[in-house]
Structures are given as structure tokens and as C-alpha cells.
Amino acid sequence: MFKKLTRDEEKDLADRFVLGDSKAQRMFFDQFKNLIYSTINKFSFVEKNEIDDYFNEFFIRLVVDDYKRIRQWDQRSRLSTYLVTLLRNYLIDEYRKKKKNQAVTDDDEQLPSSEDNIYIQELLEYVRKAMDSLSERDREIINRKLLEDETPKEIADALGITKDAYYVALNRANKRLIKLLKKDYPQLFHGNGDDL
Image (cartoon, one colour):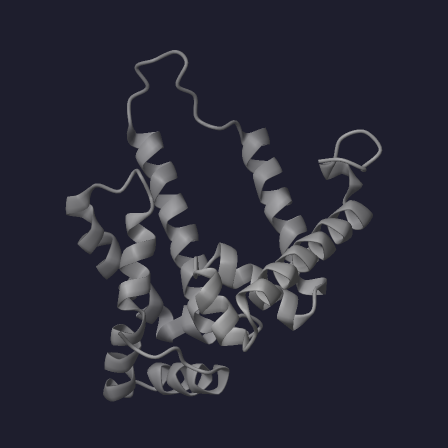
């Protein structure tokens, strides 16, 4: 089990990774391989015998085009959070390809309509913009909970607070996010925007 890197250590690792430093690339792989494997394993459409293929393909995608995807990391989130976001987007694309290539035999089985896809993309963009307006601490708490799937104890320890204080902080961060969404994107909420 590798220790969690500080933000400065993550930046240094990413910088050396894109410069082709073989030691940094090995460390990068060792540091994040368990996170990548566990994230892939959470997607129900992925068969057990496909996990290694998705794992290898994802790492290939990180290095193509002169490490373009790593260079695009803007350090607003943790590197691990950024990698999980990239991976989830990749796996969702793969799922859509699978569904398209799959013959539809049941009349009830429908691919999402283009309108549904547009709505989902708009919703994700609204949430991303609202997240950008939160404080760094609020963003980190929500990202660690939702994207990195860390336990309350892990998050509390990383933030240097008690577990009880973490629950309070998470609740407040969620409320601030919802308040921002209600203020800037009231169309996401029913009625007058007072309830979800």
C-alpha cells in the first residue's frame, strides 16, 4: 500500500512522468494501479476477463499524444481524482459503444435518446461549474467522497479533523453545492426551486 501523495508530490510525479522519467513512470503506475483496478471493477458491464484490457487501454490513453491527458491536469483537484474522472468518462464511452454494437432484441430496451444525452451533458456541466465555485476544501471533501470513494476515516485523517467534524463538513459542503445549483440553475429543481 503506497502512502497518499501530497499535492506537491503529485505535481512533481506528473511533471517527471510526462518528461519520460522511467522511475517516475513506474512510481506513477504503482501508485495508482489499485485505484484504477478498483474503479474499473465497480462498473457492472465490465466482465472479469475484460478488466486487464480496460486497465491497459486506459494507461495507453494516458501516454498517447505526448502525454496530452496528463498535461491537461490543471491541479484544481487531486491527481487521483482527475484520473478517476478520466477513467469513468472512458468507461462510459466504452459502455455506449457496447450498447450501440449490441443488437436490440427487446422492444423495452432503448438506448438513451439524443435529448437524454444532451440533458445529461448539461447537468454534468452545471454541477462542474457549481463545484468550481466552491472553496477548495469543499471541493476536496466532495471529490474524496464521490470520486475517490474514500472512507470517512480516510478523509478525516487526510484533512486532519475528527470523523464527526468530517460529517459536519460534508453536510455543509453538500448544502453549499445545492444552494449554488438552486441559485444559478433553478431549472434543475421542481416547482419554485425549494425542493429537489
